[in-house]
Image (cartoon, rainbow, N blue to C red; front, side):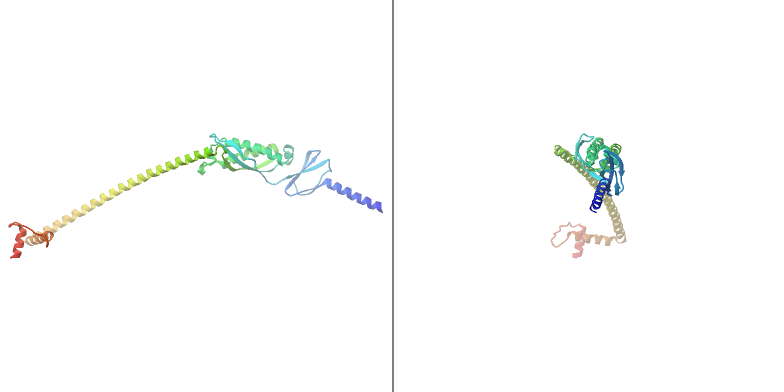
Length: 293
């Protein structure tokens, strides 16, 4: 009886050992590669329980199948107009061919080393074709960063896919800066350039203001001249009408018209503080003399 239980326990232990070395579980976020004596022989991409030959004949390597982010160190590059910049980019990638990936880079650390070289090479080549204002500018129409990074992504994707079984889906710029030793001189040049642009804007504004003021003065003179001409025309018509009225009045009763004109003359220069000396034959004295008589 004891021997039978011993055999049963031994069989269970052996079965567990065999299961431990032959069965494996693949997670939903993983892809597994079965290697035989170190060489990849099969790729398991389906999640669940799977089996293989026991070790050391076959082994399993697990890799992350999700989209991964690699953040290489910032690198200094030279632009087309000979300006030094520090570009800080990131890479979005995943394993495209697990067997090729294992054979060429072995693991994620090896993949990141290769990607760092590829991205630095392609980014340097792309940035070297553009001037600084295509990367840093206040004018959106001059900015070419998106187009540059699209080109870099395409080139990096082609190299990584064919050489290492890596799918690089995005290479994007996080930050563009200047080397520490060049920052102050670059900022000084930027300030000088902005000052020059500001002076040009001020000069153009002053020129426009002078033109507007000159145009306003011209219009003012034209309006005043037109108003003066119209006023003189009206005044001339009024004087003509007044002369006509005076003539009509004089023709109607010359003696009465002469009398009223003399009275108007008295009203203009006679008051209680005025002393008038007239000759004996003056028309004004004649009227006053008759009034006195």
